[in-house]
Length: 334
Ligand code: ADP
Image 1 (tube, helix red, strand yellow):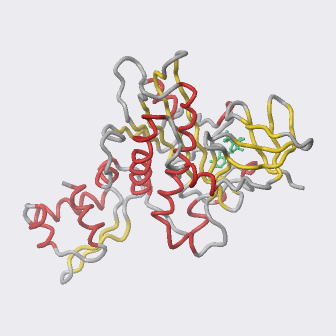
Image 2 (cartoon, helix red, strand yellow):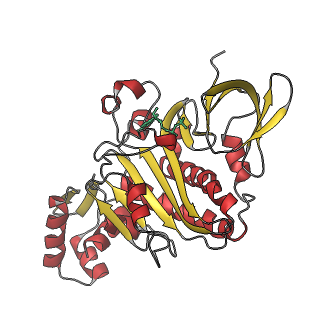
Image 3 (cartoon, protein in one colour):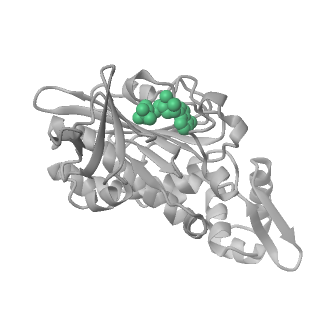
């Protein structure tokens, strides 16, 4: 019932009378009042005026599966969703769920990660109530093992689209736009807003499970980042001055993910989203530093290929297609 009231208040975008709510939801006005009180206790700011009725001023700043599910249009992603107050890492929790007959599309979210991870064992800062620290578990039986890591690229496109759907006008007023740092980070003005970590369990010829993890800085203020990353990290709140509703953002990401994932899992091809990815990945003519097994190579970006590889030109002129694996790309400062 609470989630139906929230949905009605969000959709109305203005005052809705107690009478209209009670008719729409088929309960008494006293019951409506009781539920409104309960929502207020949960942190929703709902104002009431004797003449006009109720208006939603602010949704809860906690992650709430009821609100997420109201905006979810998916068939399988997020049908089951678990929200933790605290967890080591949402990817680790998703990986603990990969035993027999696991739940394809299970979503794990936590308000804080105590051991959030980036690639190659790096730390992902995941402060309490500030971000979207979330993982989705997939069972992509049709996908070839060497196509599994492409899910990272798909997720980057889904997340950019979801953020822009929600923040559209606010972002348009800013000087830059969201870009993708190949393969797995989303940046704004060169600062990281989101990291993506895909992990996979596979045999030689089949994928047993894929876990897609993402960390999105939503409500962080600059002081919420440790000083080592303050210069390289940013959040949607820092960019727009707006405290975005994480629940709506989560639903929107899951909707975009499923739309891209369904055609992808059949063929493993990136056809339907690689142009978007390429256009946002700002590779052409960039001076890049490739960090690989302790070695740093300077080169120039050419493009992202149809297969999702980073194509670069080395100083001696030869072209190389770099695979996601053990590589980290930095922009050269010269
Ligand atoms: P890379 O940038 O080399 O691809 P990862 O994608 O694995 O590295 O991300 C981990 C790195 O991101 C950390 O080493 C740190 O520099 C940075 N980082 C950690 N937490 C955050 C965060 N919440 N927001 C932005 N950047 C972060």
